[in-house]
Each structure stands twice: as C-alpha cells, then as structure tokens.
Length: 256
Image (cartoon, rainbow, N blue to C red; front, top):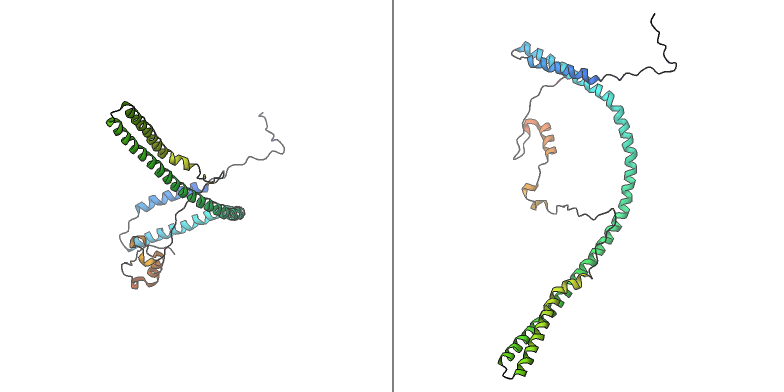
C-alpha cells in the first residue's frame, strides 16, 4: 500500500510562472514569414489571394498591438504617475537653483572684473619695472664699457686699477638689472586675486547663438521647413510647386 501524501495545512499552492504570450506570437509570425516567401502574384486570382493574406497580417498586427497595449498601458500609467510625482519635486529643486545661480554668477562676474583689472594693473606694473630695470642695466653696461676702455688706455697703474674696479661694479649692476627684469613678472603676480571656487560646483561656459539678420546667414547654415513642405505635399498633391523641390508619390498597400 503506497503512502499517502498529506499536504501541510495552510500551505499556498505553488504558483506557476505565466507563460510568455510573445513566444506563441513569435512562432506564429515566423510561420507567416515562411508562408509569405511562398506567395507568388502572377494573375488577378493570385493578387486577390495575396490581398487576403495581406489583410489577415494587418489584422494580426492590430491583434498583437492590442495585446501589447493590454499589458503595457497599466505599466505606463504607473510610470506616468511616478514621473509626475518626482517631476514636481525636481521642478521645485530646479527653481531653487534658479534663485541661487544668478547670485553666484553675479558675484563671479564682479570677481572676474576685479581680476581682469588686477591683471591689467599687474601687466602695466610689470612693464614699468622691466623698463626701469632695463634702463638701469643698459646704463650700467655703458659705464662698464667706458670704464673698461679707460682702464685699457690708462698709463698709470693706479688709474687703470680704479677704472677696472669701476667696470666690475658697473657690470654687477648691469647683471642685477637684468635679474630684476626677469623677476618683474613674479613680483606683480602675487597681487592678482585667485579665482573663486565652491566645492561641488564649477563655472562652465556654454556657447550659443542668436540670429541678428537672417538675410546675411550663409545658405549652408539654413534648413528647409520640412514640416511645411510635407503639409503642402499632402494637401496639394501633384499640384504642389516650390522652386528647387520635387514632389512625388510613393505607393503602398494599406489594410481596411
């Protein structure tokens, strides 16, 4: 005598995963494609048979689309509700950003104006220091040249020594002047204020455009109004006429 299995009281019946309806539809579509490959249209009767097959496929498409909508519409409605809820929050947060952003940009513009003024003043000061250092170096070089010539021409050893010392000191002053020229940029760089930053943010420049005179815009930057041309083609049909545009009809088989 075989043992009898007594189910546990209160246990839920096993739930089987619902079969995916698209598998059967996919198999059916594959079969219909194979049938379509065998269709030959060579006379009026075969044309009518092909038309009946065509109409049945159109009907099947509507059936499949209805099944898809049956499954998707509830999900889309749920997504729509969720998106609307969160969009209200993000829109409010974006509005918060629009309050803060103009104030930050205004401060950035003012700081950049000050920075540019400081850079211009620093550049002018750098040039002034370089000019002074250059004049000092060139004057010292001239003195050194004259002192060297005097030392070469001196007949008295003492006078020659004095002239040589004068030339040596003048050359040191000339070298000092050229060093001051090289360091002029570093001396004024410290007065330029650094760019302001804030953690988690960055200043970006997005280049855009605005058309000031459409008649001066080169042709390659212009696009035809395809929406208007399409509307004209559908309404005027063979009577449509626009310079540089060809209107034509494309045949297709429709279902009823």
